[in-house]
Image (cartoon, rainbow, N blue to C red; front, side):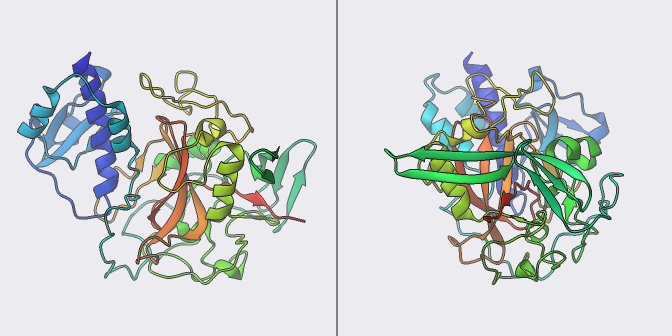
Length: 393
C-alpha cells in the first residue's frame, strides 16, 4: 500500500514539475529506468507502470495519467530514499506540494523576461485545430433567461447559463450575477507574432472544443487585436495593459471577461473566503460538474481519496478542460495537459504580485484533488478556458 501511494504521489509531483519548468530553463538529469531509441519504442503507459521513468535520447519521461510525459525532476538515490521512508505520510504536507499550481508560487520571483518582445514561441500548430465553421454572423447576442441560454450570433453557438443569486445576511453576502455555464468556444483567429492562431482545441482535436470550449492565450481572451472592443487593444505578452473594467475581450456582445475581484466575489458568495494561494474554502467542489472520468472521458478523474468531481450546487458545471502549455522551452509535441484533472480560466486582470506583470495575468483554478477554488497567476502565453459574465443592465 505504501508503495502504491508513493508511486501515485510521485507521478503527480513529477507531472506538476513539468508545469514549474516548462517556461523556464530547468533541466533533466540521470535516468533510473530503461533507455529507448525513440518515443515510438516506448511501451504503453498503463496503471501498473504509473511513476516509472525511462530515457529517450538523453531526455527523461515519466508514466503519469496514462501517457509518457517529459520529466524535469532528478531520479536517483534521493528518490530511492524517499520511497523507502516511513509509511506515515503527512497528508496536509503532501497536499501542499500537489497544490503548488503551475507558475503560481509566491516564493519565487519569475525570471526577467528580457527576450519577450514577440507574443508566443514558434509553432507550426494550425490556427483552427478543427473544421469548425468560420464566424460570419453579426456582432450580436441573445440571452434567454427563461431557458438559461446565451446565443452568440457571431457564430450561432448556444451556451447554457446560470444565474447565481445568494442572499446571506449572516455572512453579509448579497450576490447576483449571470455566468456562462459552459466554456466559450468562439474561434478567435487573430494570429500572434509567431503563431497563426491565439485560440486552440485541446490536443488539436475538434471534439474537445465541443465539450470543453477553446483554450485561449491571454491576448485572445482580452481581445488584444481590438476586434470587438478597443478596451483591450494592444494588451498581451510583453505589454502592460491600460484597460478599464469591464473588459469585453472575446466574449459575446453584452458579456465580459471577469476581473479577479469578480471571481473572488463569486468564491466568497458560493462558499468561502476571498483567497489567493490560500486554500480555505469549498467553492471548488460546489462549482465543479458532477461528471466523473468513469462516466465519461471528459469528466473529472478520481484518484483514491481525492475529491474528483463536484456537487455543482449552482449549475456552474466546470469541467477539467486542462491547458495549452506555453512551449518556449518545452517539447512542442507535449503542449496539452490535464484535461481530466484541472480547470483553469483567465481573468481580465494582470498579475499585481510580481514586478513582471507584462508577462503574467491572473487566472482561477479548480482541481480534481481538492474542494477549494483559488486565484493565482500564469504566463500570458498559456492557453486557458474562458467563462463570460453578463453585463449589468
